[in-house]
Every structure is written in structure tokens, then in C-alpha cells.
Image 1 (tube, rainbow, N blue to C red):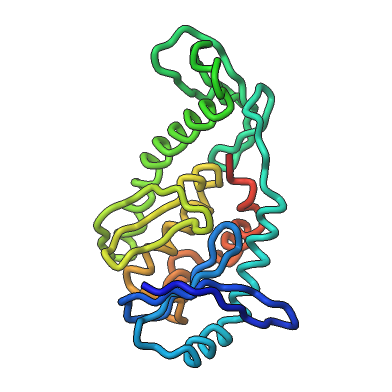
Image 2: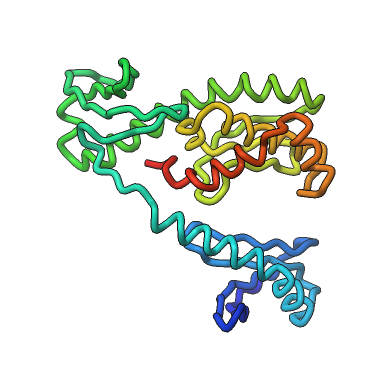
Length: 244
């Protein structure tokens, strides 16, 4: 595998990208949570063709980089202390830590408060990280239960079959559908309202019929969810809030 750095000129600006040659058969362009561009290409493809492909994708690359930079600027920084706001299924809650002598911490919703019951011993060292990890575990477990019913509902409607549901910690994706017919979903969606969760679920299930973003793909999404553009826009505008 060969790995080199190049740059792409866009409107007078230089955008650097990492070129990786592998045994793959197609060209793939990905942008990570830091805005770094990676171009993976087959071993046999020549550099002139690569530059041509990357240049064609320049508007999309620039758009994605700007979205990620904007998201990073708006990133919510939490201290995981009493009184902070946390989101759950689109509703804003107040976070409260209750110290109790428990072997295993627990998290519950009590009215408009997300309460974490935790022993003082666990809070002695690196309490911020400990609290964050407990919250993530709670969010992921709840999301796995909730999303299973949503996927069952829409897979029957679309008459598609999937292999597995995987709850992932993805930095730049809300969901994906693999060629192995696995549905991957970002656990952070548990913070979004149900209509937004449903949009991502439908989006990924439609990829079981069309593994692309063609007109046929979007027509299928619209057939199931006529107001999908509004849901998609909500996620684009508010997605940065769905984080710990």
C-alpha cells in the first residue's frame, strides 16, 4: 500500500489530501472529523486520472470540509456537572449527579432531569471521563432498543432485508449501509427527535435497494417519507448539538 500527500487547488486555496493506493477496484474519497481528505485508489490507476477524479469532486470536497469545520467550531464542550443540559429523543433535560453507594452506576430519567446514581469512589479519579463513559453506555443501550423497532417497521414497508444492526461511534456519519447488508447507525441519534431517527433509518434501508444516491434512491426515500428534505435539513443544522 502506497501513501502520499498531494494538494488540490480550489478557488485559489490549497486543500491537501492523502493518496492511498490499495488493491481496491474503485476510487473512494473520505473526509475525517478533522477535515482531512483521504483518496483511496486502485494500484493500477495513473496519477493524471486520479487528479481528474479528485478535481471533479472538488465542489463536494469543499462543501464537506466547510461543514466539518463549522461543526467543530460549534462543538459543545461539556464539564459533566450538575445543571448541564443533555438531549434525549429531541427533548432537553437537566443533568444531575446523585452520589450513592452502588456497585454499578445507573442512569434514569425523572421528569425533566437525567439522574446519574454513582458511588463517590468512582468519582475520585478522572470523574469527567468516568461520567462521560457511563452516559455513552446508557445512550447506546437505549438507542439499540429503540432503533430495532424503527428498522423492523420500515424494512417491512420497503420490503427489504438486512443482516445486522450495528450501533457505532461515528464522527462524520449518522448512518451507513454496508455491502454486507448491515445497517450501521450512530448512537448520538438517540439525542434527536424520533422523526430524525426515522429519516436516517429510512435513508440507510433504501440503500439496500440502491447502493448510491441516484434519482431512484431519493424517489424511494420520498415515497416513504415525503418530508425527508426538512428532516435532512434539521440534522444538518442541529447535528452539532447531538454530542457529549
